[in-house]
Length: 148
Image 1 (cartoon, rainbow, N blue to C red):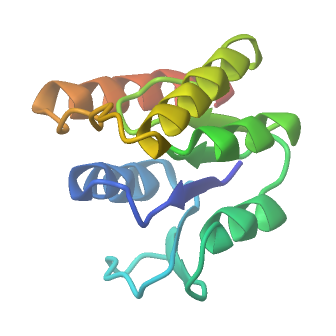
Image 2: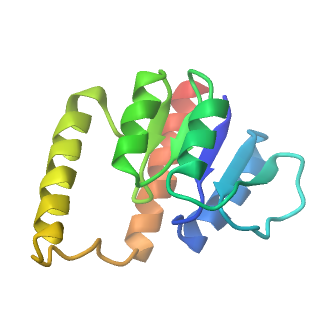
């Protein structure tokens, strides 16, 4: 299993947590982004810079991931495609996307997008808290133990 990170929007605290997990578990973590990222030197941590543009990083993750890989992303359409490819997807707050709930997540996302395009302010996600980081860490640890 490999871990792929949709890194352009990934909070720094989550990246730092993933660096520690990569070193501890010796699982390959690859951060995919439209910009050059500074990462620690480790044989288990890699950065992949893709060209600019909408969904370029997402498409590269989808191209490179294999069934059983884990992808860290808040991008719901990307998560849906990962599940179709038999991968696992978790958001930055530690919530794993499931086949059962991904359709409703896409539906809510589409409704909010329609409202925003109509000029209605729907608000963005709340800022990451220390509790969110802890939830992510705990969820990832439980997942890795199950998969180990």
